[in-house]
Image (cartoon, rainbow, N blue to C red; front, side, top):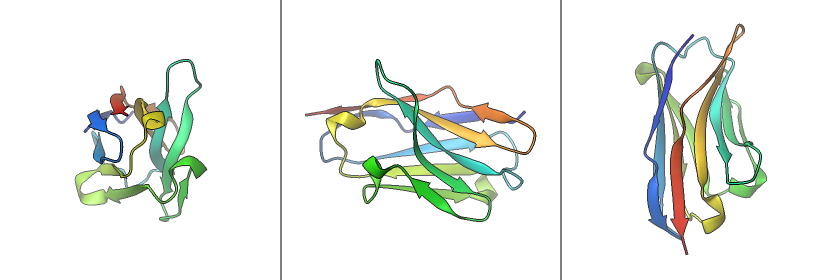
Length: 115
C-alpha cells in the first residue's frame, strides 16, 4: 500500500490561511480518488474535499469558496489550500487515497483556528 504523510497544519487566527500537503510514497497516477477529511473532537470524520483521477473535484458545503484542493502528479502530492479559516475548522485533517484495490489514510495533521 502507498504511505501518506500530511504536513502543514498548525495554529492560525480566524481569517488566516494554511496550506496542507499530502505526500504519497509512490505514484498517485492510478488512484481513483484522493482527498481530505477532518475530524473534530466529539464528531465523526467528514469529507472536506476530494479530487478524482479524471480531475473532477467535490467540496463539502462548509468549505466551498474557502478551500481549494489540487494535485501535483510529478510530486505525488495533493494540497489543500485553506483560506478564511474559522474556529469551527479546528480539527485533525486526514489525507485519504482510494485505489481499485485498497484505501490508505495518513496519520493526520492538527489544524487549530483561534477566534
